[in-house]
Length: 242
View 1 (cartoon, rainbow, N blue to C red):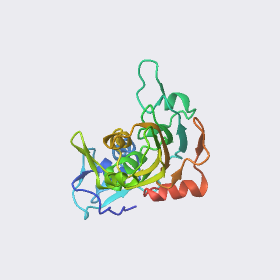
View 2 (view 1 turned 90 degrees about the horizontal axis):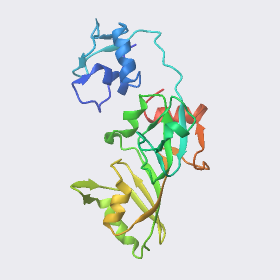
View 3 (view 1 turned 30 degrees about the vertical axis):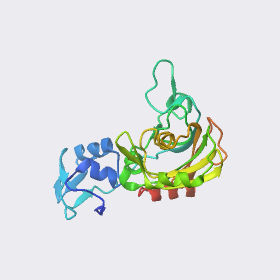
View 4 (view 1 turned 90 degrees about the vertical axis):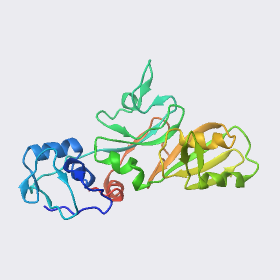
């Protein structure tokens, strides 16, 4: 089963990463396929560490290799819950979500809440988080100070420099004098808080309400819903997976 090459690949690329980006396996799963002799590169049995050096290279996977039935869960992360690596009595999403074996893709800081994807599919991580894909994430933000001049927010779409790093919003909409809707395609640490602080606004509540075409909807803190049927199919298609 020959696989097409994405024009977004930067060659040379390690074979296991190539297979992962094609949506055929996680990197670890790709290593197992290679070790088990189920992958060929230009007609020869592939070895661990092999690289795809150009779009002309031919990668094939043995027929009959199937993927496991992965889970994709939309979870409303409450405030004070840690996305990853809890310390000193903190509680993480994996500890409280009830979805054993599923990990959160990306982060929401401890004082933020809202939508995060849980899955046991390692193929999803890079496709959702790598900056080159520019996936939209939408946030509803409340601030302490009144926003008297909405035009002041336009600078966020032009980009601001904070700690030597450029932070840019794709879209900023003023909902009320203390509420803003912000759409990002970047995922830099504490980005929304840093951007608004640069303009003199202090975030009092930050809720992520959308990731690409996935919406928080009517979920409440701590609640979740699993993607099935057409919703699952559309999500996977949107990131180039099946």
